[in-house]
Image (cartoon, rainbow over all chains, first blue to last red; front, side):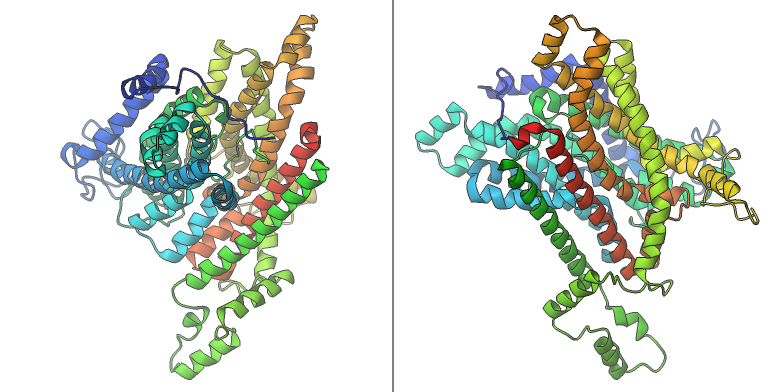
Length: 315
Length: 320
């Protein structure tokens, strides 16, 4: 099957600066579920940013008996060290979101560059870059993350780097396909005919066109990165001194919250992760669906068993 | 002869991927801080001579490239080294673990395929209705849950009624074969259910979108124009064509499931590959970790290859 890229008239074509912004906005506005997703994402970012100011108690201060059940003073109860769960959740949001955004930034930088270079230049550059991407795509990333984290030692920075450098493959593929189609559009050819260099063409004409897809890619990668952080934390590979949602799940599980019946120590952090992943998935998939129907089902795997796109590109 | 071309290309890709994986495996563990002998040389009265002696014995004084070829040669003979922790051959330990992982993963996957494809088809067929919305929401919900957390939730719910961990009941003395099988099945239920639910969401969403894609094809319109019943259109015309992406995706996901079961096995102390990975991480048992990673990678590459061949078999368009 050859890679025939369909053009979607109206969505991307000939969009001016103002119209493009309104396109993303329109897509999101037409589907109320994405507005909920955006709201949740914003809420979590706000909480994470303000944690030291709004958390009722400290993240390390014991305020009562271990596993004390929820009470008016502590709406989510206490954990195994007698620390207020609500405060822990707020502080945990910081590290979880930091990993999410940090890893995504790296993935975007690497994947975006590879995708743009491969899609724009084509030919041998594309062949080599995409071959490398294919190999990385096949090697299971969660086990590789585990191996590297185990050898490299536990720190927040390492976690961000490891997740970021293993999550770029999807971005690369998605971006490449889009760049390839944008490159063939008339106005890009016109710009080149007028003497625009490669750099200018990429940054001024190609990049703005793929911006909506980049946004979709970002949100979906954030979800996967946060998911991977909980996995690494659960296996004891996260920074021992940093509180994250994944770490809270692991702590509760290690402290036998299940057999103690202390559901309040274990339900909320997982729920936070689930709600965040759900919001990101909603936003990202709607955007991706609307922008590029061919890529449907591409990101349908936050966990290690990731799935490839339905349509394959064989030369 | 495009068909033969395709098969050859995919085979070469699979073989090269295996080599890439082997090489990564070699490099990562050589880059690890300390060498295999630093622990062994840490004994009272150890000298540099002892260290050098050990390094010589393990072949670590040879050039890296030569070490690489020795490594490949040993792998070709199925030698994955000896576990630091148990002092048993890694290949032996891994095979045993794999034997425990496979039934658990199979049960969970069958559950997911059965229910996932069913609700996926139903959702696509009843597109836009409450049934569709409910299936998609449920699918997305399960898809978003952290695996280990879902397992812990099931533990909370079924605490007391079902065993919470392990593969067999340690207090069941001299069980008859039937008792033993029932016991293992009972222990397998929760981990399999966790895997099944996590995959269920994914399979529902994928089946639905594959079905929607085929339902939009011209031949469906033709079938409808011929006056065929909806049921016949869905089962004979749409689903058979949607099978193509679904089968490929299932084959592809199988490889990753083994890797994905690491978290599940940890939650339920299921003595499989995942548990082996966890313990080798805890003990910094590098030979074991290296072997497990290799096995996981090979399984993914293998199922990828199977998916490629299936695709070739199912889709006559590639063979033209």
